[in-house]
Length: 409
Image 1 (tube, helix red, strand yellow):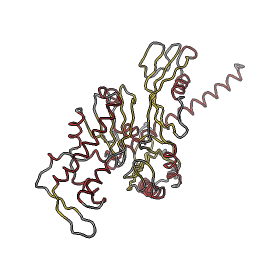
Image 2 (cartoon, one colour):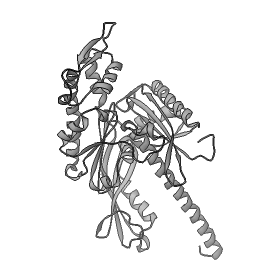
Image 3 (cartoon, helix red, strand yellow):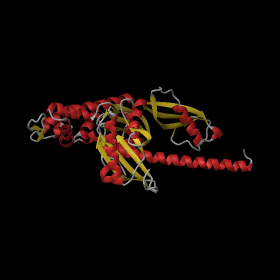
Image 4 (cartoon, one colour):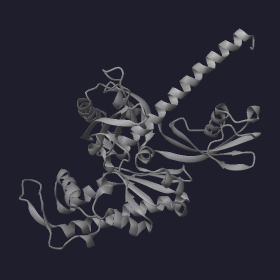
């Protein structure tokens, strides 16, 4: 993966509607991960999480990756990549198997998860994740780790996330044109949750709301497991579009105004404060009230939060998220967003920034990097699981060889 062979690198690539973010981390001996390179570039050719111009997306990815590699002084060949869009769907399923040898082994766990995932999936859809929620052995429910326990039969509940196969292929194709391979596609909000949540929040019940440029990605945890995921196909770009149309200013300047001067609650803004607004067609700039800007933005934020609230209520888990809401993504950073969200949701709300970052923390301790850093955390666990499986496989081969010599075959 790198021109330095003894470096163990993991790369997270977040191709969003507004920005492409690439982060490379080095696996440390203590099991941690240190960020050694960061790259970002405005995303072109993306709309609501989907590719609408392959060449423009490829260019954006190449620039973000080049910036990251230059900073880290390395060359990478594969990435863990996020995926979002209204085509992402979820379902909760269960599976049951008999327990071999009266004691649960890893093989039994693999079998019961395979049984849970064996639901018919349409040919045009791709399986992204099968996430175990809990296990039941005979009459004992709510088991987190069943290995070593005794019983006759075991049941598993699992959360299954799927996406449109064509959408996934288009994203993978963009990466391949950059001469990279995709280690795995990960649902954006799932990745964000790896970066911004504590174990206590997952146990108590929490909802991560990742408000990007084109989509709002939602994931709900209760009792330490994922119960619901969803995508709302409107987000921050809608606010930028409103500013551009109402103030008659170019989209690029509307985005700057949103980032630098916008507030989600008009009551938090002084009536006297003015901002300069660029005009189109060579007309002179104008001075506009910042309070008027907030009056434009507040109804849009209310709409976004109410769409999220509707999704949470329809999931049936609203009463179980005692730890409240964690907002991530660029649109979550706006002044007044937290206060307004608490007013709408009537529960605690905080901004989710990546936690426990080593290395270049000053570059990535920001809600906009939640997904990219979460991809590194996910990748670290994926690599650890792969290594453990390889070790177990080689040990199994050695045991079989020994048994052959002992005549135990």
